[in-house]
Length: 226
Image (cartoon, rainbow, N blue to C red; front, side, top):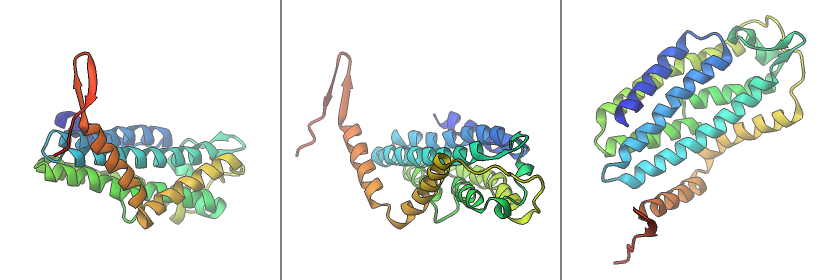
């Protein structure tokens, strides 16, 4: 698991750097995010296995919401000639489609792990679990690949907000995708403001998961009563 985690983080981060296609960039970055989730899986084998399980679940939930919101924006990027495919086509999007640009910026900052958005806490939980499991090398390399990955996420934000509009995204954002992107962006901020409900549910789920005793032919819960 440790090797798979390292390979995924390094491959995903490095392969995404030179991409010009939005969809390809997201595909390669997804490989990196799988690597971050595997950091938590690697920590499960240690003494603080509950922390590892919680970190994995929280990361997967946060990443799923970020991905849903990001693709809601991507699918909405249409011009009269067809869908927007290249990152450079997002030039000046903040001027032509401010709501879309704002939502996409939230997702990019969150995926980059910029505090105080939810993506930062997702990485924080898995890296903390790795450190407590004494997987220091994995945690350090994870942070380094996260810094590398921040480059291509922040580049998108820079293009949307600092570059001049080129070929305008001139078709309106469909209402259903607009609501989906807005709700996802709201959840990215809400987790920072009020994380307790999600963390409590995930911690309880992690404890229940670790109490399951799986043996050939049957599954039962361990008796943890003192």
